[in-house]
Image (tube, rainbow, N blue to C red):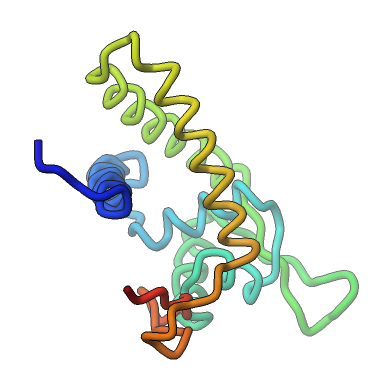
Length: 169
């Protein structure tokens, strides 16, 4: 196995995990990876306005809007007027959308379990502990980002037009 720095190892794990997830979203038949991202975030967050959904998934608002429109047409997402601001619409999963998210989670969790089966059983507890620690650290970074490096201006254009923090080396 190639020797990786911790940062390179984490990026490679994330890259391979994402690649495997994208290849295994079979339950999203006819649904794009972007639409699956929208569905899973709505499943995680509950009803939200489009702007909030867009911010949470890191996609441009117009890109998110197009994905949502397809999901509304497919009966997976519902729009409801906000009770506090009549100009705003809240997005939520329909009953069919909730089932699609359950199926997606089952598929992706099954993938993770199959991958973990390749790790010796004696190491499972250590992997679980390390992943728990990493989750806490990643959540903290998302909620309170570290100051970007002086090597860049601090913000960069992300995938699908979203803005992400730049942390150039």
